[in-house]
Image (spheres, helix red, strand yellow):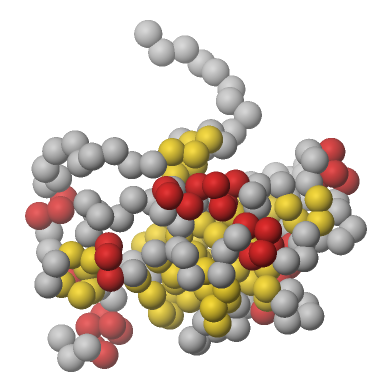
Length: 220
């Protein structure tokens, strides 16, 4: 029988993202996060309203969503309690965060310029999605409390994919059997197992989900 409980977080498992943005002085910032979901080529990102990454995104209005594979877990873990904020906010001080300017170096990752946006891409990540900010929405608001989180709606304008995770003979299709994302569930890292069974939903051709603008550009 189910029982009623009150977990501190409801983090049932989502892909980890290394979100790169530009600092005010033009240097690169890199932050791990996993509050994200996609519909087509649009993505919603959940971030603390006063965090350094959120402030960069509000100001610069562009970012790169770098998705690490499970094999990069140790690199991601090195970023866990680092912040680009200086001074460090009191609540992050209490949680043991420290300020770090060069997060790429600390994580042992390589920065490469974006093609359509200013923030850097992470070379080691098999998936790199350049994006621009479309809208910002207060999240988790209550009449008796100030806004502590924001939902950033971003639009992907260029996708860079490592050929090793593409389907054989289909250059625009990522293989779910080859792509092994790093996942976070209740603040712990996990990877994917083998495919469980045939999916009825997967019988719909993937191209059916392609945005109209992309189909027109490709001459479909």
